[in-house]
Amino acid sequence: MRLFNQFSLLINITRSHLIARRYFVVNGFDGALAMLGLLMGFYMSNQADLTTIISVCLGAAVALGMSGITSAYISEAAEKQRELKSLEEAMLSNLSQSAHGQAARIMPVIVAITNGLTPFMIALIIMLPLIISHWQPGLIKNPLEIATLLAFVIIFLLGVFLGRISGHFWLWSGIKTLFVALITTLIIFLLKPL
Amino acid sequence: MVKVKRLILDVLKPHQPNGLAFACTLAEKCPNCHIKYTVVEVDEQTETIILSIDGDNIQFEIIEEIISTMGASIHSIDEVEVIGSTSPA
Image (tube, rainbow over all chains, first blue to last red; front, top):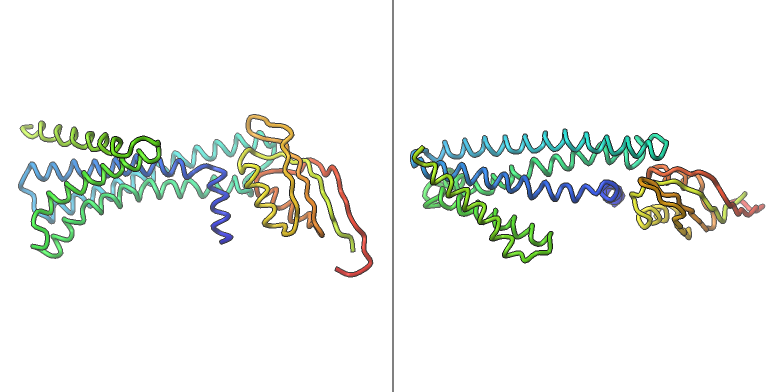
């Protein structure tokens, strides 16, 4: 309970939950759209086997995760250090041992983990039909199509989540993100002859 | 044995944690204390507050530590009320 209270205080000080929520949606959307692109590419090529598809998607998921963690940590740590320095100047005291100093050290890590894990987890969820089909051949008939459908569903749900945050009609918000996914798919289709 | 019954402190603090979180955290660490938080001046990044603390036996060291942990600093002790007692604590 004490740890929870301390954590709540750090979040309260830095307002990091808002940043983490923003990163969750932005990078989650990135992850889902990247997976959709890969799956559509494989679907169009019609040549790759399941092992290759899983390996490529997993590689992309790990890269998205690592990119999310490092980029968010570097930018958030710099931002929080700058804020701490500015506050120290205003307070005319060293705040490194205070909750503000602690928050400047811990919160970038929390935000970075959120930023990195979100696309990674979303990619894994989208890959589930492929993985299941690889482990138990015949259990899922069209794993590539189902994974693509799952990517569309997740993109729609992220839109719904955004709608709930902004207070707009959830269905309209979901349709908007779904529209982006459809445009992406269309572009991939159009690029097929290349 | 001297018991501190009342303290009025002039404190400079950052805007976060806000007044409610600040006062509640203090009250958690100082059970049976009555805490009054009054803002007297607000700047761009900081605010000056007057903390009025009433209790049976206020532990100033604990109050000072909590205030410092929340990034604030005590500017002055403006009012003190203590009771001297011959009986042990």
